[in-house]
Structures are given as structure tokens and as C-alpha cells.
Image 1 (cartoon, rainbow, N blue to C red):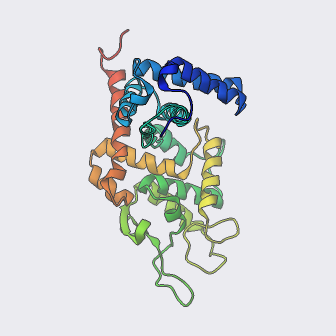
Image 2 (cartoon, helix red, strand yellow):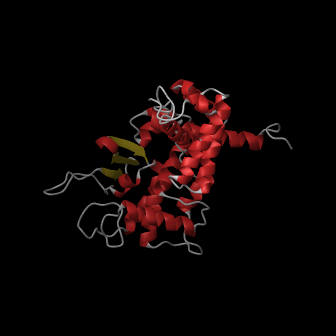
Length: 321
């Protein structure tokens, strides 16, 4: 990149920044608020660079400066914004002084850590799936269906699509019909499902879920389409994942659950609670149907959070009184 204007020696670092900000204000007509944001980002670059001339700055220097920002616990999104400001400045500066290259090219902000899955506390999960409508001791057919679905989601950690695809028993499938992708074996107390990648797995069904399933099967009407679906919609056809989601959301509101609940939260709760009790990560991986143990390891962070909370509450020296 070659000079098209003044030489590097004619202006100090502050002058170049000032000229760039003036250009943003006059030619690009950016708002004062945006200009102030650019000013703060570039002033921080000057502070971190400790007087290093712009034309001497290399990619390794920018990487080092972003590492400093990261060590100061600045978030990835904020670092990415600063890099964008710096990149624009160096792109403009190359039109005025000689730069070997834009030193920000190829430098990326640290990746944002994946958010931890949200799981319910054990008591909250149990109360949610077992609760009946307020003031009622008996359930309607639809409510028995809901309870069986919610108990099974929490008992076996199924994906909502796997739950919706369950049949009462296995069937091979006739003309124009696919074979069962999942079914309940009430005799053995297992649920067999086809998960991602068409991988079959068998997951145990807890006693409370089996009782809820038995209560639902006792009143389950014949499916309107003559099929084999385990869980039915109000029209008598196979329930859809969206309907399961909406029913669970409304049930959680009626039960007074303090957070928004969705089917995957029950799956997360299943995994977290089994890991807390057993510590067997490989077993949790198999029950969830994860192809890689890496996908399951996120629950170890939840398990550690649980242990840390127990420690804070129980240890007499954990917190200053």
C-alpha cells in the first residue's frame, strides 16, 4: 500500500485519528454517538500500542492487543466491535501513508462461549411433570396425555420430535407407510427411539412415567387416521412437536413454574440430574443419543454449578458471614 497523501511524519498518531474521525463525520455523516464509539476504540488502540507508529504495526501486534483485551475480561462481542473500528481506520490510513498491509486482516475476536443449557432444579422438574390443574384431583383424557408426555420427556430425556414420533407398539409399515421410528415397550419398561443419523437407542422409562403412560393408554381413543401413534392431538391424529411445546408451556404457566419451559429444557434437566446422581458421563451420552462425548460434556459444567451451590450453602467457611 502506497502513500496517496501526506507522509507519516507530517502528523502524529493523534492527528491521524482526528482526521479519520472528521472524515467519518463529514463525508460519511455518521452520528455523534457513533463517532464517539470510534473515538473510544481508537484511543484504546493508541493506549495499548504505547506509541508504536501506525506503519510499524503488524498482525502479530493486533493479536497481542486483542489478547490483552480478552485478559481484561472484555466480551467477544465488544472485542469484535473494536477490531471493526481498527480495521476501518487502517483501511483509511493506507490511503494516506505507506502500510505494508492492514494489520487487522485475519485477526478475529475470541469465540463467544456456547451458553450452558438451562435445566430445572430437581424439585421444580418433579413438581412440573407431576402437577395437576389447581383444585382438581382427576384429569381429563387430554390432561392424562399431557402428563404422560411430560413425564416421559423428563424420565427418558427424549427430543420432542422423538416423543411425537412414538408408536404404541412397533409396526413394520404397510404400503405407503413407514415403519415405526420409536415405540414404547411397557413390559420391559423401555422406550426405543430413532434419533439423529437414524441411530436407534433404548432408554429406560421410570416408574412414574410408566404409571402416567398406563393411565393415558387406558383412556386413549383409537387414532382418527387408524395409525399407531402413542400421543394424539385434539383431532385424534399424531401430536406434532409444536403442539407438545405449546402444551408444556401452558402447563408450566398454570403450575407456577418461574421460568419459560420448553421440551428441550426437560431433556437438559434429565441429563443434568442423572449426571449429578451417577457421575457417569458415558451413560448419559448413550441415553441422550449423542454421537460424540463432547456434546455431553457441557452437562459437567451444570453438574459443577450444582456442586458449587451445595458447597456455598453447606460449608461453614464457604462464605463470609
